[in-house]
Every structure is written in structure tokens, then in C-alpha cells.
Length: 148
Image (tube, one colour):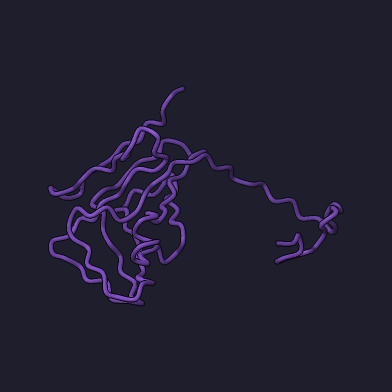
């Protein structure tokens, strides 16, 4: 199995490069790069820098930023946009829009692991404007239409 080669640029000296926490990890842990601690008050959103920029070599892949399950389940620290999308042509710093959905303020220190980045294949769609769509058993049944 070949690996996707990703170029990474450190934007500051104190950067912790993303890493896989275990051999079976799907996501690379992203760490905060801060000059001083950041108190994320309950209900507040903050852009937390990671101090890195990447180059994805093909538009058939994207990088997707997800919350870390421990931070989300224990402290309510999630991504404000649910999932961040890093396009193959973006070369700026990766920042995580974190939101505190917990009951108390949460302090983020320099080097804390704040999110995870997963590389996945993507396809650009070719949209075909039509008058009718094909019929299916479900049809237009929406939320809850397939049961619990």
C-alpha cells in the first residue's frame, strides 16, 4: 500500500508536528501553537492555530479536521463547523475553530492536542441539470422516514 505524500511547513519554531497516536490511528493529532494559554469560556468560539501549513498533491484527496473524542465527550470541546475541510489548493495555516459546549471554561495550553486530521479521497462531481430524478422506494421520505 502506497502512502499519500504530504508536504508540511512549520510556521513557528515551537510547532509540534501532527502525529498518529497509535499504529491504528486514522487521524493525525493536531496540537495548539500558542504564545500563552487560551481560556475558552463556555459557549465561546476561538480560532486555535496549529502552526502548520500543508500541501496536498492532488485534488483527489482532502484533509478533514475532526474533534478529538476525549475533548468532546469529557469537556464539550468540539469544532464549531463540525468538520473542517482543507482543500488541496489551500496553503495557509491550519487553524481549528473550537467551541466550548461544556459547562465550564476550558484552558488550552501550547502543545495540547486539540483536533485530528484525516486524509480521505474526494471526487469532484459533474452536475447534470434534469427535470426528473429516478424513483426509489424511499422517495422523498426525510428525517425519521426509515424508522428508529
